[in-house]
Amino acid sequence: MNRWNQWTRMSIFMVITCTSHAFAQSTSPTSGLCGGKLRASSGTITSPGYPTAAYSHSLTCAWTIEATPNQIITLRVTDLALESTQNCLYDFLDVYNGTSSNATRILHVCNSVSTITTVTKSKMYILFRSDESVSRKGFSATYEITNAEE
Figure 1 (spheres, one colour):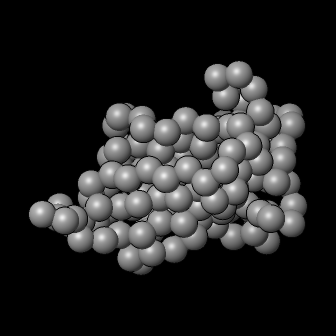
Figure 2 (cartoon, rainbow, N blue to C red):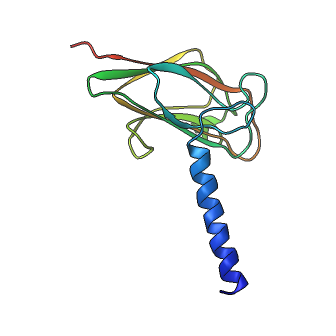
């Protein structure tokens, strides 16, 4: 095997390993890694560094919350300070009614606002993205899984 093939195979292995490792992490203010599958019945989600430092540039953080079919997921965005632009083109927080960004988007925000509450039935996908330039304090949100009222 020539050196080019060895280097190419090693590079592909490193990219796959690093990508899958980063996605499996939960939010960690010290390491900057974020995202993952949230398994607890309630918790807090924050951007890396929140509230003491600005989030990093070029971040993509995705959290998935899955409950049973007879449960609902309530997400409350309690603090939001992102790069603010019309239509949230650069840094944004999205929430989807499902387990990926292919599901119906139910929230798209970037502007500083008071508390936002959104509810889905059994599945929620939360996506935070930042571009390569301006960054701010970030966001904090709480979630809770409860039984749906019949």
